[in-house]
Image 1: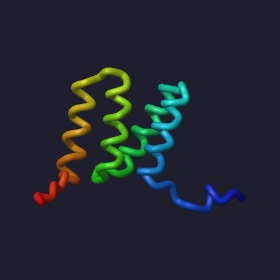
Image 2: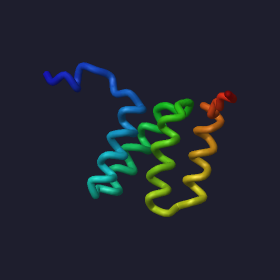
Image 3: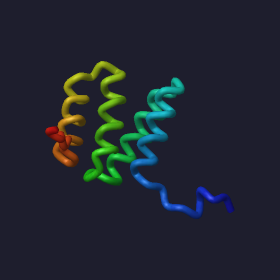
Length: 82
């Protein structure tokens, strides 16, 4: 039994695997893996951000903006004023 079978698959890890697969030239497979990761955890800004990166790479600007907006709603950027 491999160690991968023992551990649960985290949605963020699954999305990063999808992004890596996508960037290796397996675009459809990578997109599906990232989408599956997003469906497992809709409240993670990482899953939304990774899907936005994939949409942006495909020049799907509207979908990328929707994903970035959702990621920002979940984890807004905190700017420090110094």
